[in-house]
Image 1 (cartoon, rainbow, N blue to C red):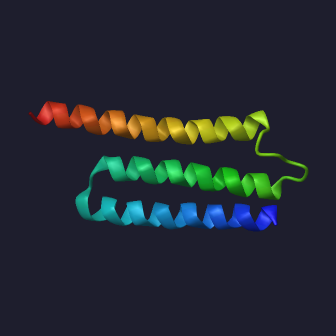
Image 2 (spheres, rainbow, N blue to C red):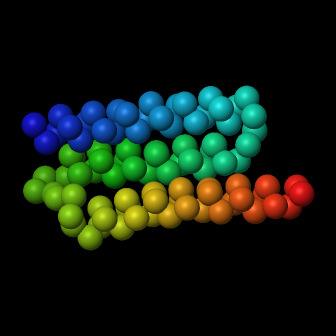
Length: 88
């Protein structure tokens, strides 16, 4: 059951990635590309948890990968806010 849920979350992350890529292609706003990268990293992490035998989401390696994905999202928000301030 856990593998099915991991696969579903990875698939959802890939769908969200495609959603952000589509918006990036129409607007060329780097914000969407960075957000898409974060969801790609999260999808890869979920797949790795499912593929590696006897792995657990609480292992430090997987935790650090997920932390990296959240750091990418934080960077995207900070980047977008700085760009908005510079335009004023």
